[in-house]
Length: 190
Ligand code: G4P
Image (cartoon, rainbow, N blue to C red; front, side, top):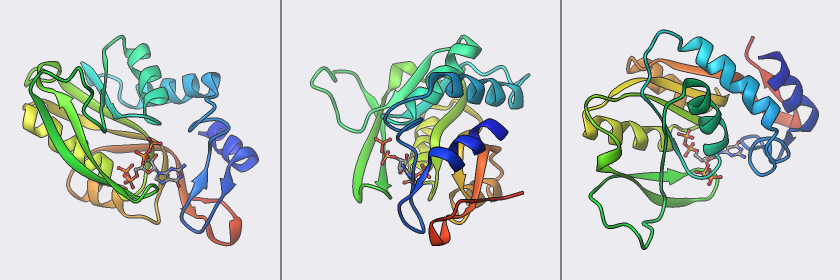
């Protein structure tokens, strides 16, 4: 996606060989028009799949996932990282190690919001090691729902999350595929 790549080149900040900061347009301040374009592209790629629910993890996954759910006119369901005090229902849960924050989270989704009749598209801002995505996939599997695929705004291809998911037969679509962040330079896969 040309527009997304241009934005990354212009406003993304390479913090290290592994971390790309995009908080001026995705992770903190959100460029809503860009997210709309991102969502249109994801919806186009998964056209005809009859998706019934978009699933993500709080917090940075929510803006792109919300836009996709809005375009598809289906609910957005986001996994929580901390059980809220209002949590009284049964939940599915799975653990995920956060690569950026160096903490383990217990992701939870209330059972009544996901079932075997759902066709789920997972949408996230980054696909990196695949920890968060794998935890979401476990939850989708526990619910009996069908996983249609995984869509990421940015995939860091030098980390192996996307490679492993594809190898296991899961459809993965990412809109900007970063090959390397070495020497402060963003290189995309062609
Ligand atoms: P994933 O590949 O399934 O996403 O799992 P991984 O554990 O590798 O990454 C999950 C977390 O790390 C997500 O945020 C994701 O947004 C963030 N992340 C991974 N690589 C980068 C990066 O290069 N830059 C930035 N800005 N974020 C990255 P999180 O820890 O769940 O936090 P948040 O969503 O609450 O912000």
